[in-house]
Length: 476
Image 1 (cartoon, one colour):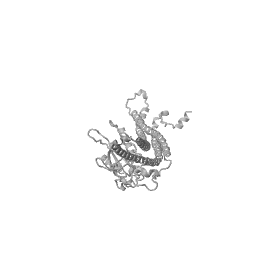
Image 2 (cartoon, rainbow, N blue to C red; image 1 turned 90 degrees about the vertical axis):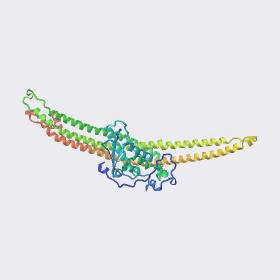
Image 3 (spheres, rainbow, N blue to C red; image 1 turned 180 degrees about the vertical axis):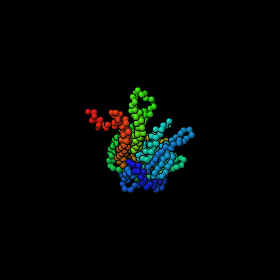
Image 4 (cartoon, one colour; image 1 turned 120 degrees about the vertical axis):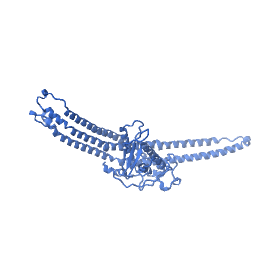
């Protein structure tokens, strides 16, 4: 993946104008007539088959490119904190954000889009964050915001635009205000109550198979990322070793310790060698620089892209867990509660069918009987209301379950849209290796002629070093 490809930008589409309060998963069944906000505030229905995504990887990458850089100066009177400059190519904006701003933004995304892949944030370190931790977190925040900015539903939501473009002093309150009186995606999507109609009959089997496949892909990419990190780290370590190697040769050539005449026997070999060794540090410093460039390039173009894809895969795994532990669990609890209420009503009905009172006592309990009858009727009406509410809650949970599966189906497609990123990663790795070895080979070849004075032959005449092939011939 080249920088030019990542920096392509599609025309910005209108962000969804849904503004209001976040609501929980226990919300009632959404009806158009029940919504307080005007119909234009609701998420519009996609054209064609709404279940199918028609995006390509290039289209997703072109939605936006967001840079996250650390501002050198730390602010705060007592507790210093790190501040980030977040720049969006799409919105042509540059704003300052703290880690806690990312946290509030992340929480709102989870509340508003509980059935979508919301990437996780890097952990917050309370005390003594060193430079390496801060840089690692900056990279993770950059991956997070780019995945969010390129996600189809997120990219058209007003919350993202606020986070990337609002330059006021209190972005957290602004984010919270922007979602007041608006429900989650289930409440504002016109397709919510019809999601079941678009799902394949074997959606549960497909979901299980997709989840297993993506789990296997994640495990393999996790190992690839670890190996890529080791390769890039070895290149950087190799650069450090080459630099030290050249410095030691230079130190040897710069040694000013007097050489006794009885040891040299009027032979100037050592002086000649010292002069040659002293000048080799320049070439080894250049070799070290080439190796370091290769390691850094592989960190940025290979390791970071593997981390980006792993973040996406992990968010899918988290979404699957939310689906099972959230919607399905609440649905089961609602069914259990409904069953218990039914049993209690049936038990009360049976208990009321007792034998009639003795005739001679009827006159004394007429008022009590009338009161009991009225109370029983009220209790029956109240129980029926509770049952109706519980039935409505169960129906809502069933609709949420189908909508959750609907979103999962789309998120699974999104994972597969990102799969061609593998070829970009491998291409970057191969190109880095070719370019790195080519540039280092050029420096080694330029260094070789400078070693001729180090190999003295008969009568102190310089003899160039043998190639590996020549050495093999003379060794037999």
